[in-house]
Image 1 (cartoon, one colour):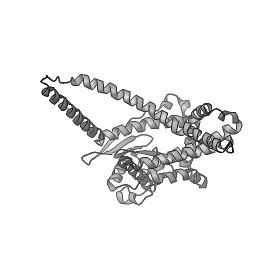
Image 2 (spheres, rainbow, N blue to C red):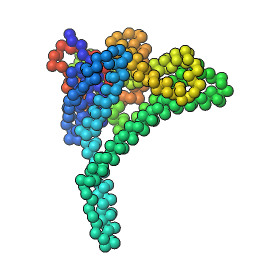
Image 3 (cartoon, helix red, strand yellow):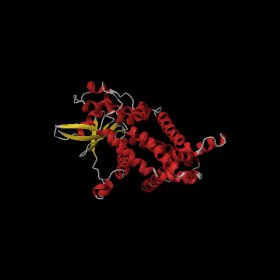
Length: 345
């Protein structure tokens, strides 16, 4: 029996599912139909085999997953009608502004010159490109601020208030706990919004459907609904695991080189440089959790399972239908397979 690895990601009104040979995006369209779109992937390790080595492959996989996830997210926004709705709203606003300008021109007895649509479209594309670039830069800056600089600043404040009673020996532990708190707090906050809540409901549908398949049950809504929405190899576990691995690595660095924490800028720079190593080690641990099921791997996956209470919600029946469609789309033609879930959320 051939064993395959299947992973997924919740999207806007849909789910991306991938196997070693296929990647498919299933989205519920405005007319109620489920659209299936296949994405052709290219892996850099196919050209540079050394990037498939342990630890290195974790960094590469994380970057490729981020890029693929963004592509799938944009595709789901388009297929679900969200992009079209936003464009219609923007067009309506634009027409309202033009009408006001026409009325003002008519009131003053002046001729109103209609805008050049072609030139406007070109200008809009340039503006969109600039805004997206600025957004990416600000996103990276925000991540550095929240997860690198802010915990360091808070620890420095604690050390100052306690007159040095809290020494640098405890810095990695306290900063690590603060990072986890910030991450969980952020997830809890965004989960309150309507759109993100629906994405988390699709996340739950994804987990339930894969559980159903793993148990060899027929893929139908009634069977999927009975499954758990918490999966030990979810990407949420990977994020939490990275934070925990970061604590251990930073503890080791501070133990070996205690002077590095004397200068906050240097310490933040070192933490940034350690991100690829932390990502790589976290990836290897998740692969171990995916391969073995024992007390040790369950303990490793436990923190992520707890946080999944925030990142997964109970799905509606129509969401489960989308999840079923997405997983069927990536299954191989050979039915003699066993399933190994590897959630990419």
